[in-house]
Amino acid sequence: MRSRALAHTAALFLSTAVASALLSAGGGAAHARTPSPPSSSPSSASHNGAVPPSPSLPASVDGGAWRSGHLQGTAIDRRRGHMYFSFTDLLVKTDLEGRPIGSVTGFTGHLGDLDFNSGDGRVYGSLEYKAAKAFYIAIFDGARITRMNMDARTTHVVSTVHLREVVRDYTADMNGDGVFDGDTANTPDHRYGCSGIDGVAFGPDLNRRGGGRLTVAYGIYANTTRTDNDHQVLLQYDVRDWRRYERPLTEGALHTSGPASPGGKFFAYTGNTRYGVQNLEYDGHSGNWLMAVYKGTKTAFPNYSLYVLDGSKPARRGVVKGQPRPESGRIVSLLPRGLFHEPSGVYGYESAGQYGLVSLDNGRFYLGEAGTADSGGTVLQTGRAVLHRWTGGVPNPFTVPDTP
Image (cartoon, one colour):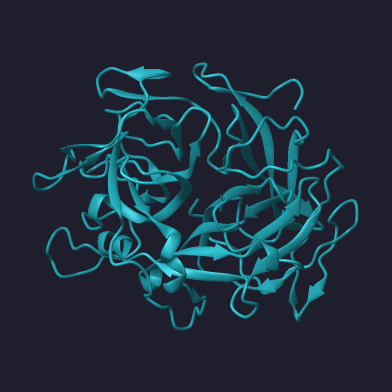
């Protein structure tokens, strides 16, 4: 999820059957999309709440084709019938028939995974500015996203909260040479191999000491020469009082308003992966957490593409393996199901979900699919959310249902 976006300034929906031309909007190059065929009507329930099965949900939702970065994540507001797509530097809001309702542009940072918070009706996403050593949660007020090409910096549809803990680990001088080595994997710096953040999801307190939390997963650099980067790192925050931290997005003067530390920090032993948890999701049906990743390359590990945290087991105090100095932390357990790699003790699956992962809390999920389309010689990035059913089978635990 770390491909950088192409430069852009504004976007315009093309209502033709094929996005075969780019129009100018606001003096800049436009985003283009291809409309999807009509589908069934939206459900009246919202994600992350207690929702009944909703057979009316469509088999897929088309996120369009855009001059942007590749699809990073998706989120659904079932009550209002809206789907949100993150395209690295662009947020797109559609109805459940894939018709664009609005978009948010103007990001020069990396917009990653998304999740919908049923508590306040807003969409939360990870947002990175690595060159500035700044990491945020971007909070979108979906009710205000009513037209295409809304500028994130001037239209008051997005606010941001700074994550100080991520900055501390990203900038950590692990070899003590007094030099910050920057955005590179080829260094002993960056505590735990932290490359920033990506996966975000709402779910229970992993300590089982409170209610719902926003969980934020680190990106982890791929580096086979170090041993301290073999955990997925998860931060949890209680966001109920976050409005006091929220600030507008001002890229020319990035702020540092945010909590001093997370409410909890947790470690899941999976082996090193390429940029950590791409999409994180809590499944209210099973009570487990899903972590979709780009496969790692360390030969001592199985390098699965999906790991599942056992929601029935609270975090326990244990050793954070491979650290330069002995370290203990809150360890979360992998679900003992699926494929098993006995030498490392790691369980997992081979699955999609790296470009979008949404639980409907009834045994069904939307998985994101990313692709490209040619529009008059211009390469557009495409994305859609496709309905799947969890079977728990191996190697792939998902199947496309015969009917939605």
